[in-house]
Length: 119
Ligand SMILES: [Zn+2]
Image (cartoon, rainbow, N blue to C red):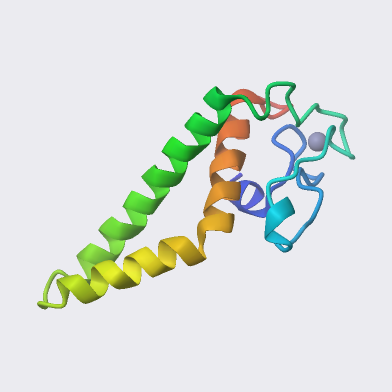
């Protein structure tokens, strides 16, 4: 299930891709979802996909994941005094990983609302 979330697979059958483009590039279309799963027909794109509530929920998860990355890096560097260096490094890392983090957040969000067919 974790692998399916990371790969952006359909929450219901875990076979069909839920993104129009497999890669996050071009970045402008990295969050573009398919209307329906090509394998099982599960509706992926909701009508209120661009509603403020949805964006807010995605943002919260993005920040939560960002915070986890900060915490991990903080933990790695806690034994030396390079705190500022690790903060800068963490910030750059979060910005660089942003497209993947946003996708991951959205995948987790979808998995919370669409149940696997055998569950
Ligand atoms: Zn499917």
